[in-house]
Amino acid sequence: MSKIAIVTDSNSGILQVEAEARGIHVVPMPFIVNDVTYYEDISLTREQFYKRLADNDNISTTQPSPDFVMNLWNNIFDEGYDEIVHIPMSSGLSGSCSTAMALSHEDKFEGKVYVVDNQRISVTQRQSVLDAKEMAKAGMSAKEIHDKLMEVKMESSIYIMVDTLKYLKKGGRVTPAAAALGTILKLKPVLQIQGEKLDAFAKARTFNQAKSIMIKALKTDIDTRFGGDVNNMWIEIAHTENVEEAKEFKEEILNTWPEYPAENIYIDHLSLSVACHIGPGSLAIACSKKM
Image 1: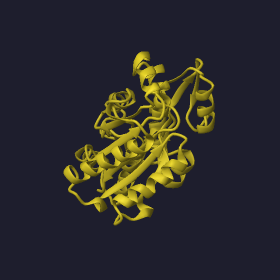
Image 2: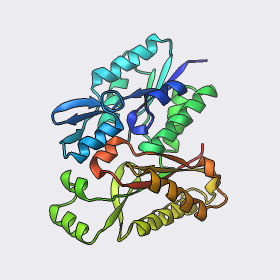
Image 3: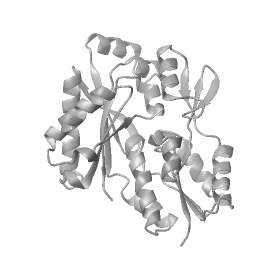
Image 4: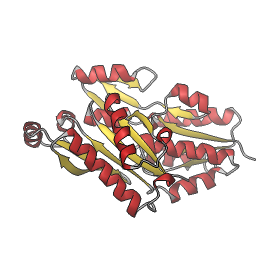
């Protein structure tokens, strides 16, 4: 049986300590802060990131260099692995996926490295990584794991409530006029990730209304897209520096689906690549269909 390595990036929320414990390899995502490059969980902690964000430092995202990715793959093969399943963030949100795909077709990696573009990020990407690990344990080949993850790539949803329009405005994703009006009206935009794009979904006037909109949207997805049985889903909560609200949100979710095991609702920080564009105080609900 082939020895298969599972590789992802830190957009999955899997940081180096957890990765080592689970036997997963994680590419730390690079960030440029005031023209200096830092790496998530290596030279830039989550606390440092939010401090720099609050200080209005100029922060932008970038993708790992091809050399970094190829060196990681070479090191993995040197460790005795036969094949690699590489699960980066959605190709619709970053160029890192298409770069990895191009590299995987080089002669030394062709047929040995399989890059999965299943269009996920954060907690749903994390679930794909855990699913891949279980499939590898079950004896599936890298190609079989890749094909299965691609087969179910649309079987997830994320809804994100943005607390402030400041960072969307800073990144040019809303106009200054729209941001000013939204701030005056205290709007809480709800965004969605369905497949490869981050899109507007709804506008809420209050935090509680935003939470209700997200729960209702997820319930509709489960009922209409995923077969109607919530126990066939993984439900996940993500946030940007908003852990207490995330815990309260969990209780509201359990009120909607009292039959769902509380211990199965996973709470995590949204990846810094998303936080960079929406800022602190956000809250998200997500689901992934169980394999």
